[in-house]
Image (cartoon, rainbow, N blue to C red; front, side, top):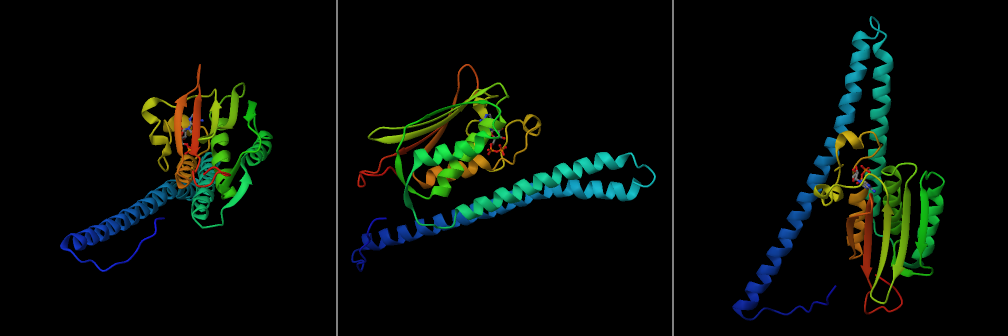
Length: 260
Ligand code: ADP
């Protein structure tokens, strides 16, 4: 950040300024502590729900399994489903934690990283994939972060788009900014949910989403990472249907060679 020069405050105004900065600092710390506490509360709640279901079905089998063996397959199916959900949650929470560790930023070819991520995902993709990537876009940052952004957005496009649909991934740049977008022809996101999908654990229309495995953490990770690099992420409707996620980063003036 900015360089700070320490001087002894002389006037009452200077003392007031210092005391104000100090209070602002305290407020910021309280806010981040509150957010961390909220996160722990939310995460515990999310883990407790499948755990309660598992325990409920274990008890059911214990109490009634012998006399009514027909309850066993249904209960086992629930236990199977809920434990898989917990596994996914724990895995994503660990990813979230790992991303906050500080690694060195390095210069790398973003075009190549996105192409490699697509090669990895295309094996599991049932949709038609369109790729429009401008070659040789260099940026400075942590590779893992940009891998996570790409992977989460493309995996969502795969999850929320029917088999016959299309996914278009593009990367472009001009002298001011670079723009990365993932567009699909899938189910779409209603306007009232567009802002909320970035919140941790939020999923659109639980009943619809529950058919598809997910935790509601992916987009919170993406948004956190994009903002870490001072970028923006927006959602627009694709035509005639579907969703388009657009991520933009502006070029840093003092470093002409790299974006971000
Ligand atoms: P998850 O997919 O694990 O539920 P995300 O945080 O990645 O969690 O997404 C949050 C919600 O946003 C999803 O549950 C889904 O309802 C909606 N969503 C995300 N991406 C798309 C998309 N490409 N098309 C339609 N809905 C989407």
